[in-house]
Length: 213
Image (cartoon, rainbow, N blue to C red; front, side):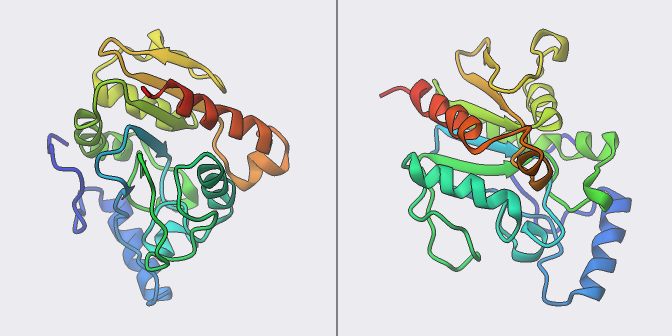
């Protein structure tokens, strides 16, 4: 995708995803079941990049990480570190606001089994590129998981092999901004203790510390 727009609520560029969302909407008429827009401060210096909307989370509510297990740890951590006005994201109209932080996904539509195909990740990369282009100098990008990490690098035109993904890894980009990595705050990762609450809080706190005063 060559678009330099940030988001297209009517995008149907990926036939598999469009067809899948049609089926989800038929089964759950009250679900958002469409591309999920980024959420947060338009002038944010911290951009958090997840994988894709969850079936009964963002895909249902229309807000990233809202209504699913992964959002519990994410929004509580953002609140504890001063990025969010409340510790829980319940719905798009709950009044929660993000401060100096925005949340987006590498893929804006729900994929079957939460597994987007490579062509779908690439098709959505132009939207992410537009978001990254607008980040100010000294900004920090926090990638949740390997797919998000690679999507950020691809959107920036960086060589993937030059920036290895690892939890808590810090990458100074050529433009002076930072890319930080974290394991995704998914139910699986937290319940298996691959990612603990303290591990995640430490990464987000590091992102806070890297932002210019």
